Amino acid sequence: MADFEAMATTARRIRYDLVRLSHQTRAAHLGSALSAVEIVVAAYWHALRLDPQAPDDPGRDRFLLSKGHAATVLYAALAHRGFCPLAALETYAVDGGGLPEHPSRGCLPGVEIASGSLGHGLGLGAGMALAGRIQGRDYHTFVCLSDGECNEGSTWEAALFAAAQRLDRLVAIIDYNKWQATGRSDEVLALAPLAAKWAAFGWHAVEVDGHDLAALCAALDAVPHASGAPTAIVAHTVKGQGVSFMADDNNWHYRIPTADEVEAARRELGLA
Amino acid sequence: MRNAFAAALEAVAASDPRVVLLSGDIGNRLFDGFKARWPERFYNCGVAEANLVSVAAGMALCGLRPMGYTIAAFMTTRCYEQIRVDVCYHKLPVILVGTGAGLSYANNGPTHQSTEDLAILRALPGMTIVCPGDASEVGPALSAALALDGPVYLRLGKKGEPRVHDAPPAVTLGEPLAVRAGEQVCLLACGTVLPLALAAADQLAAGGLSTAVFSHHTVKPLCEPFLADAFTRYRVVATVEEHSVIGGLGSAVAEWLAERERPAARFCRCAVPDEFLHAAGDQHYYRQQFGLTPEAISARVRATCRAYPGGNK
Image (cartoon, rainbow over all chains, first blue to last red; front, side, top):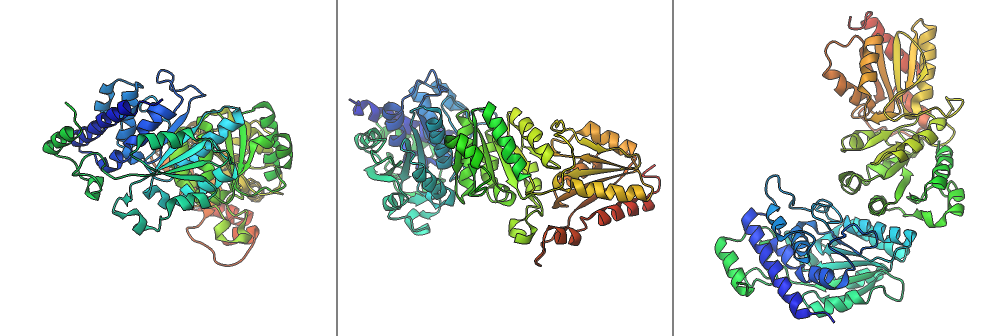
């Protein structure tokens, strides 16, 4: 039985790291990282079969952060999960530091791919899922995409390929926070109805509240789907979730929090 | 050359179970033998080259040795970012095979011609670029590519090119392959133009210019000691390629040459000019328009020799 209370506490700690790191390094994309916190917590503290001490185990489940601009959410999750010391987070976005603003493969143990340019992760994940089938391994491959990333044609190329190959151990988790860099994601391109699009592309598509850890864990537990189709979890989220003055305000795609705002966020998150 | 690739693929796949082929919806009958032997190692990725490259990279991240195969223009210019980020940034051993290199598919028009692929791929860190000069070079080149632990672009022609070598030659990536000896002129042929270079060499020799020909199959990395020797030994060194004059082998040599001090030899580039043709025509027609015939190549070389009778000396 998952300990959702402990996971929620972890989520709050990760959120504070995201806010703090953005302030400290003046690195953008805070709102995009905050919306994906429960997704990474459900993955790393519940769904993924992994051992932080053996990050290269060929049989491990893979988690790919395709929306690489939310890098801090992945870095913080790996650090809190024990893949590296928490101190490694302090090398984020500093000259000569190990953690770039967009991940490079292996910059921390557990960072599976380089990402940053959108529309790459699902194809990489499809290749990993197919490799697993060829090699007789039963691992799962989870790919976290942004909704803006669903603008990219290559995402839909990968979706068609995965459906044709019936990659039932491939899971796309779409962090559907309804914003992209400069506008509402349903208005910039006609994204809605998003789950129906994934279903039309041959995926088993489900919709969940992307901040409800129990709902996310249940959806992740249901993989692989009996139909043999890959699974798309359309996670309805709020950009900037967890900090009242950032929530659903797209200025926080690029805005950097002040010291006072970091302190306000810390109080809201209930951290000492 | 395509058939030679299919045969070479079967040969390497038989000894290396990591080899997987990803096709971009071409080669319908070409890979029947491979598919029959290893159905679980052949995937038609459809007309979706960007995804093909990403899938290949994902497979390579899991220890497989994928090869992508489609028409050269679609294998490169269509999906450049996937090659750059997914393959090269990750330093992955993915072999991208482009068939119909250069003007091979001239009759299909510029959409199907591949005359910028070397230029864009040359700029990618870690990329090795190999252009076999005839079908006999394909097998050794593929084996050499598979022995590398990084990205490779293998640029092939189509089918029915003249064979130059009687038997598969030893191919060492990065080392130009001597095909004919000569003393005054040196032709560096990149890929499918090797037979043209040999014919041009015949004409030059008939006119009294002893001409060496090399299959300069590896465009990247360049063999600098070889070039240093060639530009000392000959009066004229010329590159020949079915690629834009911008960015291909000629450019690579020119870039290297520009930083040398007083090379002995003069240099000229025989390549596709910086333009698209809008007329219909086959490969021979296009070669004629672009100065890529034995006559045009030998004329260029003779003119260079006349203008600089002693080279740079």
